[in-house]
Image (tube, rainbow over all chains, first blue to last red; front, top):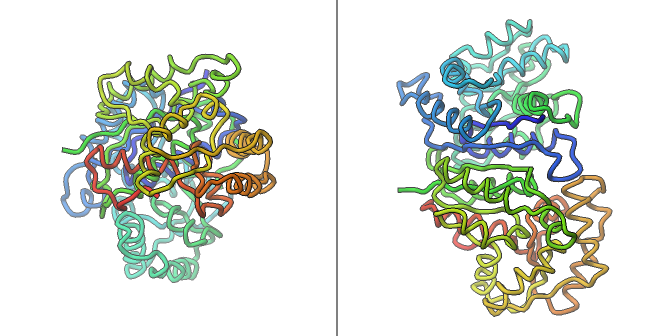
Length: 236
Length: 236
């Protein structure tokens, strides 16, 4: 019996679409009816996660919990959150429902270890970086985290907030390659797209070489957890 | 007060993602919280619509109604169905809920008339073509419908079912340009992508010139109906 996947979404809404499309692409299917049942709540009322973690912004937990419960009421058997930064609030959201909530940073870290990666450049929001959610997951998996320098981290935030969320700056005006060079120079073997907006930007820029996509790792784990037949053996 | 959009989806699941992404792209927004609240039920248990209309396949209405009611219970203020063929069952689905259900073929036809198009090539499933759902909408809008010849219509079905839904045939192996030439030779000024799988195929093939996308017309109408600020003035 296949399970229904519930998506706590809207963080941002394009990242939710990207995750849903990855679930479709990673499911072996010859017709619509072979695909998994997915219910997504693109709840754009969820306050900004980084602002809450770093700048005393409104707490996102009440809206995250509201979406989680709504999805369970609607029939979701397991939940996922396509927002890495939201995983700072994982414990509170997971505790609010009786179904499993998959943990994207832990799944991504485990997949890095399986791929025998020892040191990874972490591209994420300030909130994710400062909360240590990836530090903990990567340490447990025995993978060294390499973070951008402060100046380069500002470029990552610009890419996420101005490039993808706000669409106020053309993506190619943001020096992504400098960021990757910086990470590589400090030992990163590969680059982890640890913000769900980044696969959108990197895909548009044609910069996916050596990039590992946490959204894709989450999508594959969700397909497996829901009893779907994965179309690919590994998440990278 | 903005309204929540409910998406009766899964027909197929990629078309649902495509519609959701178009809602995002067509909403003027500088941050996640400016976007509309969307709840999507990608209900892949909905039986094939063309099979039901033409070959006595299982009736999709019970699952369509189930999704519609689920979305209303979850808080949707208006509903949309990103599947043109499903609009053959529009009356039954609309009657099952107390919120408005937008009608994609009528919205697309009205947008064609606004763009002053007199004759359009209709690219759709056999179910949509034979049910007359676009005939009626286009007639009402004063737009002449041009359909592919039977041999060309088989290529359209191959593109939808083998190319996009089944992914068993590479898209470029299907002679899409022959279909467009056939329609043009019989008076079509433009081509209406009247199956929600087709924008995916045409986008991948780089064949969007002179194509009008019913999914995009529906997305724009949904943004307006929900009180979002449209990022573009017209749907084409």
